[in-house]
Picture 1 (cartoon, rainbow, N blue to C red):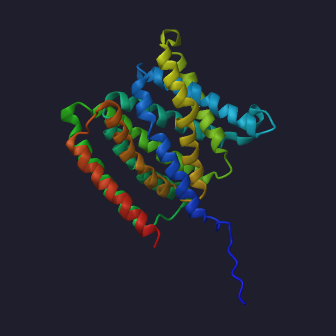
Picture 2 (cartoon, one colour; picture 1 turned 180 degrees about the vertical axis):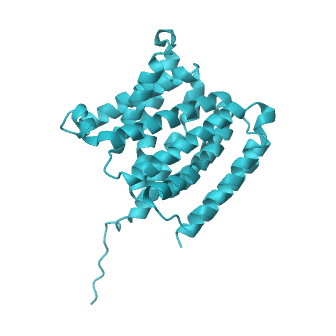
Picture 3 (tube, rainbow, N blue to C red; picture 1 turned 135 degrees about the vertical axis):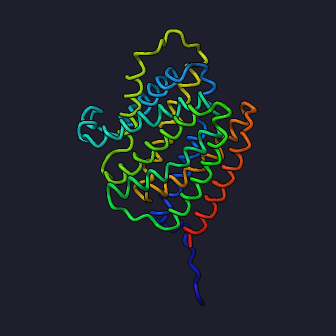
Length: 293
């Protein structure tokens, strides 16, 4: 008699699958950013300050819980690579927050889809990392989608917000590639430093005493939970898959964020943005299918 044995344990995930799953979760968490930013009811500088403040507190709490040594010692061990990554996040996160104040949510996240282009260029410059042909094709399609979106922005008066979104995409891509080069850098520390820098820089141009209770509660929810851990996971994903691939997966934000804005604020994306978003969604689907072959 043959005895059949069944294993109750699931087969281990491959490194690539781990990276894909982590990047998808990061994209979902960060898709909630514009909802909190709009609900904050304060200026871009104030929103950036509160985001940095609460994110820094959240990251510090997690680090203290996980590690036996002090946070100061952990930061010193991380060294300059963590500080540089924090500076890159200071620019990218601040620009993203400001852009949402000056253009539609759909425009911001469709333009942020340019991130893989800058990640691929930076990866090539820093590490000579070869980017697969399918990734370059996907990025070309993404560039077309962005061009369609931006073509209608000047007439609608969204040029400032769109420019800030493009600046954010540039530095997100650079940071993803930089962290892939410096694998040893703690992603918690890099995001914590970036958040701390945001709080420090914008503290000198804001008036916290004038914030309403709603502003404090909304930004606490964003800064303590969804925003920092979405960014940490997006950085962690670069340990398992290339920076351009992480950027491609994060394009999910370009679909989810406008959908959430439509539900929360009845914000209907411009026609050009819908067409550009369709191009990007098609790109994501084709890229994911081809990458699994």
